[in-house]
Image 1 (tube, one colour):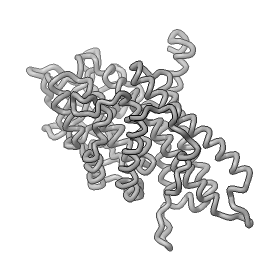
Image 2 (cartoon, rainbow, N blue to C red):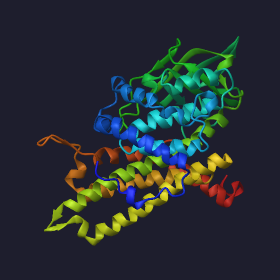
Image 3 (tube, one colour):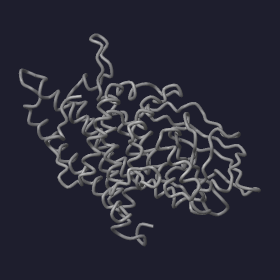
Image 4 (cartoon, helix red, strand yellow):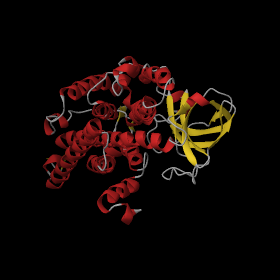
Length: 404
């Protein structure tokens, strides 16, 4: 990748010193481990064999999974853990978006932060193992007929009371990391409410399909997970019976801030590649960077990248200090994910065929913009579609009486 424009266009002047140190640490890991593997991670079609085990284990050895959590469970015990976590996400996603989404957002935020607030002994048994990279975790809320609408009426995965625990039947869909998963947090219908249960994916009755073949985010392996009379003991209830929605939404709020950070990373990567290309490529004897149209377009993109980065950082800081980040969390998710699509599209346009190509066979060269564009779109969809995030913001403006 070319020089990072953010190093002279952006300033972390408002960030605490610990966040600056985390950015340096995460960037060093990403430069060393992810940059050389980026094309493979971003462009290899989904398969169980393609799970990025080596990079996952390297991240655990580097201690990046310790960053979100308190010292009492083996974490770093940072003053601003949410800010640090989403900063890591931006640095990872600059090179490998699907990897960052699956194995930091999915593993560290959705699974890990839910376990952080689980009761004992689940918390102390599973969370340290997750941090050490001994387990691959999955977070299962979506179903074939329920994704955005996670209501009791919509969910069809049912957990029934039996002696000593629960019996689960149903199917979850789009479950990140499931082809390589060891544990899975499952949102189930329990009577007239929803509960979260932790299931060992190696138990009898758990069936995982082959990985889905998607437009982008190839390193983020997803698949259907079917539960056929799967027994779960009582002490694997995460939180309280009927408290599943609270547990799920709590993690998803943090995940939405994280998706905003991932979007900023994709936008920045596309911006950096395109502006470097524009400064070198001549058309009719003039560098593309001399054309006022493209000067203004990329000046606007620079403004929007700065705004989106500030927004996800503010959301994370507010969550660390106040335990809440609305409306900043949905704003950050919309701003980052939408921006990634916009910048990638313009980057491809100005780079022409060099933006559209994945691999140029003659000189045996790889090109990054094609995969960034493919990967960017899912950010506007997953972890709460942007339309739903707009509704959440509107609810803050007009109140529930108007918006429902």
